[in-house]
Length: 190
Ligand SMILES: Cc1cc2nc3c(=O)[nH]c(=O)nc-3n(C[C@H](O)[C@H](O)[C@H](O)COP(=O)(O)O)c2cc1C
Image (cartoon, rainbow, N blue to C red; front, side):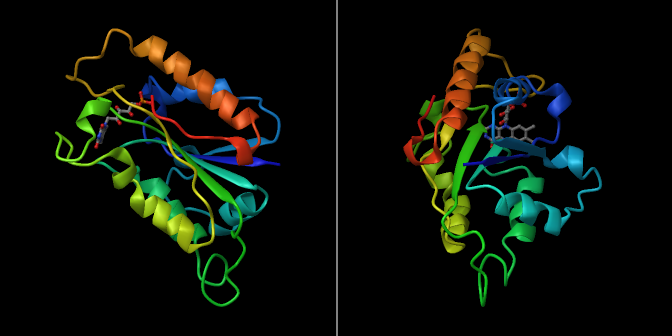
């Protein structure tokens, strides 16, 4: 079983969390990693190349920092290009059916801010519904997301004292998740 990790992070060189997550999964067997902003500095996605990478995988992972309660723009563009009519939906569009999509994301805000009626108004799973709905639309399944909260990396926002330890623990869980078969992989919050 092979896994495709689609990474979208516009500022990976300044990342605290995602650089460590990528280091944790580097070298895992049957795991291909594609960092969209590095592959496409002009933001023009090669749809055929991305579709071929998706076809080769039984599990797709979207790894990204939460940006304005959504994905960075290149991950949205990836869906726009890869979930194409005749490939992913519509007449003959069955090529992604049966695959799974695992979301692995980080958020600056603490988990308690992500609840119904709370500071950020909704639970994280509610904010992720468009990704889940699109995956379902093209015949893919989506297990619960793996989310690391409270890892702000924005100048002027205080960094929690335990951030490094929590990133390390999350990175180990991420590595374990990708080392396990998709069928038994279960999501969790951190
Ligand atoms: C443009 C931008 C938008 C962001 N939007 C959110 C947001 O909506 N919710 C949130 O919790 N954190 C938000 N953050 C914080 C990032 O999610 C956080 O800095 C990132 O997950 C940390 O990972 P990194 O160290 O790999 O960059 C935002 C950060 C930036 C730069």
